[in-house]
Image 1 (spheres, rainbow, N blue to C red):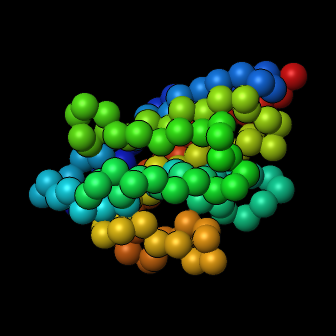
Image 2: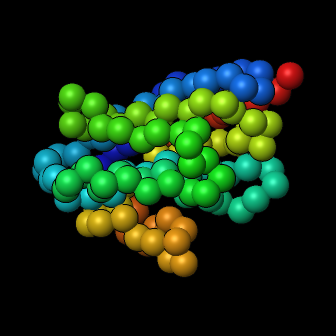
Length: 129
């Protein structure tokens, strides 16, 4: 059973920064999965913003966050963080940590997940002046 616990959400003004963390608790350790951050915003459907493939460390970002967000794996390999800088009002939403076994899935350049993915409970990010 895989459990994902997010933390680090909050409220910041435009231009501010936040760092989200995701702790992965899995009974059988595996170094072959994609840990991703998805968000649900008022304006858009669910959007995959960043993904990290643990077998090699390759990363992928949505165009909307490139150059502003950075996903990384901590020294404790079961922790993944999403550093968010230069936040915009349109970044407001609920952010979910998602684990997919195997490599990150891209469809037309966009992160996608299968029905077998594991989701955290979500953490709220609000960007407002």
